[in-house]
Amino acid sequence: MSGHPGNPEPLSPRAKLAVTAGKAAAAVSRAAGRGSGSVIGGKVALRLDPDLLGRLAQHLDVVLVSATNGKTTTTRLIAEALRAAGPVVSNALGANMPAGITSALAGGSDAKYGVIEVDEKYLAGVARDTTPKVIALLNLSRDQLDRAAETRMLAEKWREGLNGTKAVVVANADDPLIVWAASSSPNVVWVAAGQEWKDDAWSCPACGGVMQRPGDDWFCGECGFRRPAPSWALSGDHVLDPHGSAWPIRLQLPGRANKANAATSAAVAAVFGVPPQVALERMYQVQAVAGRYDVVSFQGRDLRLLLAKNPAGWLETFSLIDQPPTPVILSVNARGADGTDTSWLWDVDYGRLAGHPIMVIGDRKLDLAVRLEVAGVDFRVCETLDEAVAMAPPGQIELIANYTAFQDVRRRVGN
Image 1 (cartoon, rainbow, N blue to C red):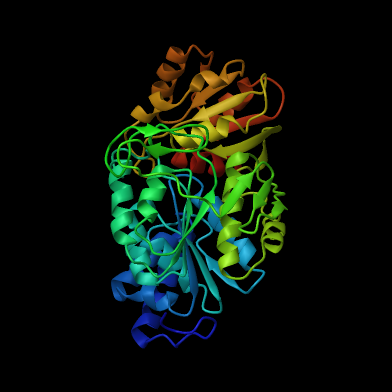
Image 2 (cartoon, rainbow, N blue to C red):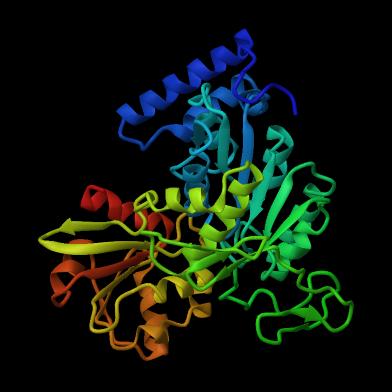
């Protein structure tokens, strides 16, 4: 690995200029009220120095985290765990394409570790630029159908991009697409993190045959591709390490999916010598992640903000919400950052919301209304968040939104 972790080589004049210009562009964007400015700042910096991302990463021990669901939360948990061993720089707000990553690293000259969330499409390129020590791969499922292509193609791209990588790949043994993608890497640590959503993994990624799924196991009856033996595992409320020791998971974040994220994060931290007990204790500090899981007060009501971007994410989120008759607001947009194709709504089992009073908002509220009608679930269509909150029966409100709808809600409630 070039450079020396914790002992950065000085940046060239060109790289320094790029960093300064990027920070200035970000400041202008923030002043204009256009968000954090991290993306425009990174774009300006990379225009001036196309190799800047690699230069900024050269003194860091880098962890890359990629998946369809759980990237932002797992990145945050790993960053928290590694702070036990030294300063960390991370793109904690989820700007996960090269410009946003460059912008985040530009603020981390004193850091020892870089913990970076990477959009699935950019993983191979960012890995090439940053020479990571660890790559964490959590899951792959359908998402942004108009942009990200089919999951099998993405797994194949990862497999080619990670072929022969020097990084330790920490990968979910329960997701056949992840196993296929990671199997080209010489050094893989397998984690039994579970897989709730299985609808994207019924055919074998190696040969196209039908997958057999007895219990938690899986294998292809035609070519023999099968689930590897994990060395780490999520077991109820504990993480089992490679020695068979069980370490309790205590999180302020809800749900089984976050326990799985914590198990993967503990396996990543162990590569850097942070013991599971220390890593897991530090993860307890995380209360919310970029607004997700926050409970906010709005118009005299408590709203819990939950993000669900695709069928797998909605399935996990339904398992988190309080029982009926807790009111639920659903908000779906289909802007560029969400993917403009809403056909995925038909893959979500909205029947699981039966018994909840449901209010529907967002740009694509009518698409969602048709889906709920077919599911036989009662709902009211509302024009605004304010109207939906006013219509909700008493009690804390669960608000589930996809990506840009979630950002709209955060702006409205001042979060």
